[in-house]
Image: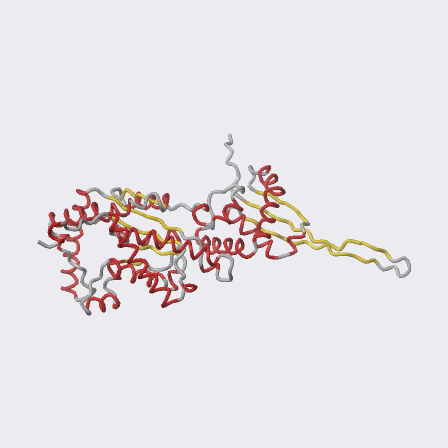
Length: 399
């Protein structure tokens, strides 16, 4: 009897973790060698979308992108495994296992269109992939620290990972899978008859209740547990997807509501946290605004600090005094605003906090010296910065 027969190896979580480390190190080392460490520019925000069969992932992915202002297409792992690179692996007799999935995914994430944010559908699905995701996040943090005081700092921003799970129970999942199967059959009959359109995939699991049940249980026992295991590490969003599409999408909006403590670099947030947060900032401008503020903090921390102190000490008392009207005007001659960058920082800080600010510069010629002989008056130019701050005022009950 051989050693393996008498004492078979038992696969344990510890072995899976060690295997994940080996896999990740090989993939990461290959990327560094191929691209150069300084060129590993990954998305700042990843939304890892998981869901039970029939939970509406396909329906809601575009909506999630709209809510977050994400213009890049979602990365769907099942489609990635049908890519030319994956087909090459299969054609050569290889299997697309965890290591190949990770390599394909990280290479895809390095593409310029995913620079800011991306929705990732179908990853992680195994314990090994979960561990690789943790190691990937750790490497992004290390890159951030390594390049934080270099001209390349803006390429290595604070990463934000969201785990979003769309959930339906077993009965609802089976019902939706079978309904989808019937709808697919009807559409394909029409396409075959008219010759217009592309045939949709007819999955076996969408026609057989037992196969549909097995597919749901596979999700619940493997993918769902893998995603839940990340709850204590990343921002976790559990969406009850059994309600109507309108209710589900309202839940998604609520879960992904903007929070500066999650979006900004910790140093930036620490500088701004004493300024009251208004209701919201303009969604479409959020991505660029966050990038600018993080850039200011990295490249001009002293100016940021002076502007923040001026807002806290000089402006906030006046703004609070006019909280009912939602409109405050503050004049200042503070020399720091002779630098146009300080004005830009002030406006962006107020925008991040949910206010609307504008600055007008008024120049006045102030007499300084009178020449008794020539009668000439020498003047100096006095700059007065008039800062207008608008925000949602107090709603007072009338009558």
